[in-house]
Amino acid sequence: MPREAYPAARTVSPRLHAYFARQAASVEDRREEVATVPDTETIESIIDAAFWASLRREEGYVPRVSLAFLSPEEAAQPLIFERPLRVDPGILTRVGPAVERAGIHLGVWRDPEEGLYIWGAARGIPRLCFVVEVAAPGLIVIKYHSGETSGKFVNVAVLEGDEIKFVNQQTTGVPDYPSLLTSLLGFDSPASWVHSVNVLVQLAVSMRSLGRGGSLLVVPSETGSWRDSIVPPMPYALSPPFSDLANLGRAEPEKARRTIDAIAGLTAVDGAVVLTDRYEVLGFGAKIMRRKGRGQVEQVRLMEPVEGGIAALVHPEQLGGTRHLSAAQFVQDQRDAVALVASHDQRFTIFEWSPREEVVHAHRVETLLL
Image (cartoon, rainbow, N blue to C red; front, side, top):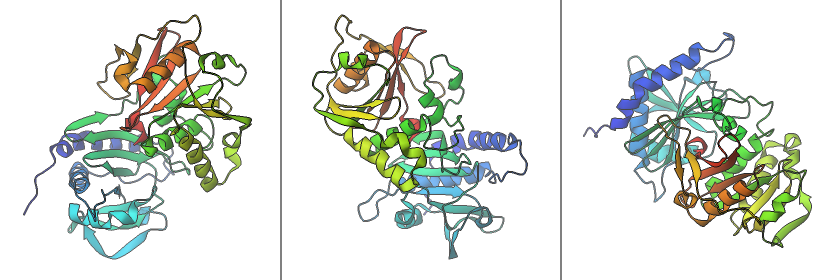
């Protein structure tokens, strides 16, 4: 029997097609390999199948499937099925465990006569390749490959049930916008994914994936004034500081990933991890207190980098409770610091002081970390 259509898929598909067509047309170097842009009908069909697959279970597990629209010829070292599969929720659920690992995608293509089908799996995909990922039940992320050898992806839209969020990719021009968000939005082009603020991006992704909640404080390395906002002594201070993060540029990718995950794991301990802007870990389990002579933080400007998002002044407790309140207080008192906070519900907030508005900015960025 025909299944019910997912209304959001039909709503977003024309706009997504137009977006990817513009992106492909804007590539200046015609010699650069750019993925084929799917038509509106194809986009709708892929999203629809992914959504219904996300609501199924395979031996009790929620499917985590990534679908990439490309031909076998466009993929690097493709794994090709002898018999193509239909793009069907049941089939996606059954084959999903084969592509749960990051960077592996089911390859989807459209034949003029046979229609849409799954031809196999791919790891290497070209720039601007249209990707639909099942992140959780009813939660679908549309993204594309940035073209970097690091495998970095750029999120375009997030669909959660009937809620549709398009990432606002113009917000990098907003005054006081954190460089970390610029990296998350995909506009920076570092020489390596392990350089610059991308270390923090990877830490943020790893912290969120833990699902335990946690805090990370990034403090200036040239001053120790941040200690005025920490209850002494720090329970798990490190001597000497752990400096492996600072050397990730020379590390093998697998070692870099293990180092990132190890540091992110420290945030699961009660208290905050303290990291310098040179990526040296000073300790963890730090308890934040209000700096002597400073007032209690009363409000933060809450922002989310999605289209239609409206900045609002709210009390920090409205963001998630004590962990968010203490992070906001720390940034208000230590205005050259940044705080990253993961919630148990996998929401993620970046706190940074805005000199222009003289208020703490709280950037909700989980749509960029999916």
